[in-house]
Image 1 (cartoon, rainbow, N blue to C red):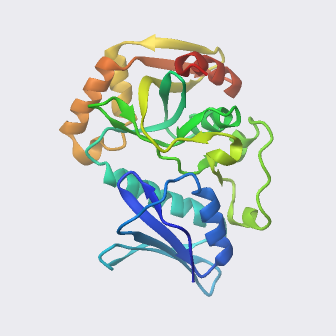
Image 2: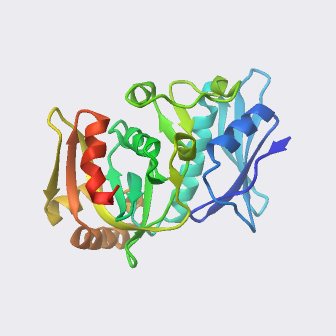
Length: 277
């Protein structure tokens, strides 16, 4: 059995272990931007099955073992691990407003780029990483409303083939690592050239992504911002009114924008003045 180092993400600390040494190396590379954990750990475990699939479990600090998923293919195993880490990290901040958003930052602060799956979040985050911008997340934006700081969650950036085709050349994976990816590739932001943040950054704007032929960044009203925040909140359903009140406060004090774009380069140039890059 081989084990990664211990990682800390929001309120969740974990290590990963498997009887597949190469898979452990893949996970360690993917999650290299997360800070080290100390203290009690959960252990995500992927065990090889006779049919070539994996069984994924989570061992809690108490010793209790929770079944996560069985019959996971080699091409799907990294995505399943990523989902489990996301889920546990999200639960650890269930009373916070956590947005479905990529977060990139510059000298002026951080911008949350909100959108559902296939809205371009991760592709824009990867393009910003290739420019050396500061990276906080490609998927979840946990916000401390009292301080108006967004906390980093530098999980690996997930890129599908369509998104990869819109970016500059990507770094080669180490030998054998590509065997663990299907259409969804996972790359650490630092592999792409980003500075991976480990501390909270002031939130200066909330941007809602929309594919469109004409590129523009349009300020939106507080009411429209709140409506869009509700649609892009991952914790509203977990905690209800406290999160809604926090979203109301965000909509009141943080500027909201609609970003329409057809090309990733257009999105980058429109976001650039917001972060001061």
